[in-house]
Amino acid sequence: MARKYFGTDGIRGRTNEAPMTAELAMKVGQAAGAHFLRGEHRHRVVIGKDTRLSGYMMESALVAGFTSVGMDVILFGPIPTPAVAMLAKAMRADIGVMISASHNPYQDNGIKLFGPDGYKLSDEDELAIEKALDKPPRLASAEEIGRAQRIEDARGRYIHAVKATFPENLRLDGLRVVVDCANGAAYSVAPAALWELGADVIAIGITPDGTNVNDGVGSTAPEALQKKVLETRADIGIALDGDADRLIIVDEKGKIIDGDQIMALIATSWQRRGLLKGGGIVATVMSNLGLERYLAAAGLSLHRTAVGDRYVLEAMRRDGFNVGGEQSGHMILSDYATTGDGLLAALQVLAELVEIGRPASRLLACFEPLPQKLQNVRFKSGQPLETDGVKAAIAAAEQKLAGTGRLVIRKSGTEPLIRVMAEGEDPALVALVVEDICEAVRRAV
Image 1 (spheres, rainbow, N blue to C red):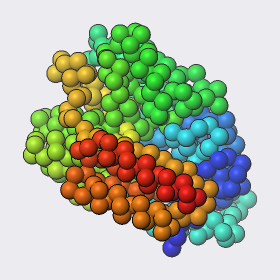
Image 2 (tube, helix red, strand yellow):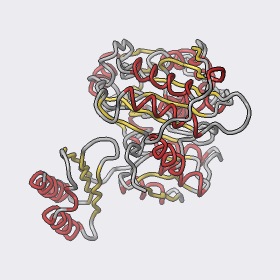
Image 3 (cartoon, one colour):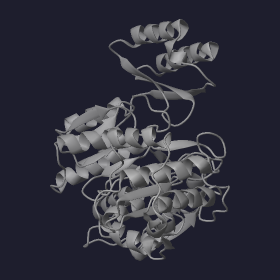
């Protein structure tokens, strides 16, 4: 069954335009609530959000939907996505909801759903909810309508849980850390957690106003972090995205460190400490070939999946891995979390920085990446990848790269974009084949 509303990471779109309307949010609450009404107990949903202006509207609509089918609602306010997943399980909720469009601009919003186990919903659950969206809801009787309440200690619970993953014998005393919270969901919890562990914290992106989430700050705009790290002579910089499930690092020299290098460090660190499971890690087809070669030299494997942290997590759970992630910065450490958690992953890097005593520029330069180029092409409608011109350009590129590199072409699951990535030994050839394919897509649209 084709998906009508759910993408690779929940439902997402521009607010007040289909599908991301208050009407749909209420229907999602009704459909998801009814789907998880299982048993005779009093059912409960927990809801968090990031700092977008539309969060108030979407939150109210979801509350109306869930309470109308008989579910009680607990509201957390602005809090990271991984906190919602963690608290859904800890508070014995039947479902968890995060209102966020992650790294997208404030005009967009999204709805992410988690089951009672803290994991994102299965394809079967999402399809069942989609099917129910087009049917009249099963409304509760007047006496069974749910109640809603807001709790104030959700952030404190999350800070405590994240700090518990940091080695007890280590502290961050004397370490100057710049943290960029993207004016998003982690604007209070990330600086607090780092300060409580002893770091000298310099925080940016901590003044959300509803319209500045991810605006020139955060993991998708690391220039502000680079500037602040150099300006303050910090030891390291940490950038999160709007809902704090993504991490990008800047070393003390201002160099950006992507998810591949972070995964390489965590994998070998955990291998040394006897914590790594599965004999390797899980990453997507976008991860650099240099990461694969580095892990192989350490006797570890790299299991690749389709793009999307849900696919990474599926492979981790199926095959027994406990470290996985994406080059873009999603890090899943399944011993501690059921979804990507940027702050948690950052603490693992900081622990290694303190214990080994090397500067970040040396610690996080695990391997030399192969030349890689990623370019996005926006389209309005249709299926540009199915046109003869684009197919021919892709075939020609594959022939040119044969034996020296690889090519990944995909349609984004969250935006109307075609993503074209190539890597290989020859940077000029890599750039050429990417531009040829992008030009063919432009002609097709």
